[in-house]
Amino acid sequence: METLEAIRTRRSVRKFSDRPVEPDKLRAVLDAARLAPSWANMQCWRFVVVEDQATKAQISELSYVEAYFGPKGYKSNPAQKALTEAPVVIIACGEPPQSGELRGQQYYLTDVGIAAQNLMLAAHDLGLGSVFVGVFDEQQLGELLGIPAELRIVGLFPLGYPLEAPKAGPSRKPLDEIVHYGKYQA
Image (tube, rainbow, N blue to C red; front, side, top):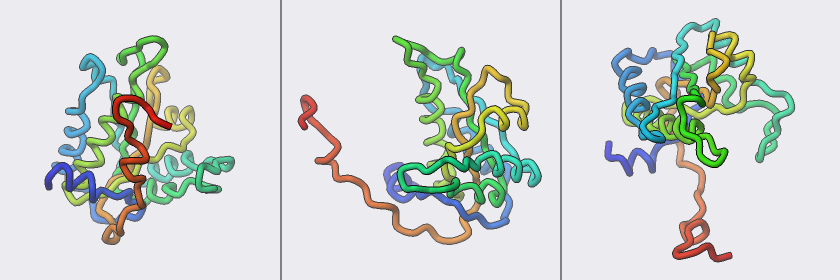
């Protein structure tokens, strides 16, 4: 798949078939994340791969935040069920001491975000689906998975074969609404 085609056609997948993800495809997705650029090539990302059903169910429970309403008024995490149903869940972490910092800005979030985009595009290219899940209890999730306290959990990525064909994506703002040339013009 061409890169721009992958970007145009990738969709967030929240419903998965029970078909297992082949080890070579899982490795290819993780390798794509590994190859992402990072601040000073520090490569501060760390990934935990979970395939155990009971553990995925616990991860799902920890992604429920009763008080989360978000921009669309969700009363729960719309991807919570995907964490249980997907054959694989990848937990993406950042190691702040291994990330660049300049003027108080830590770059582990940016670095892990770039790696995560590679992960999702590679998954799409391989016929897999995923979705970024950013609502979770970080402390309890870290304890469940034995993630060292100095790491920060950035996102959860259920991964598997989509249960249904993806629909057209949501609309996007036109370029003239988001791009400014020379300087910002209100």
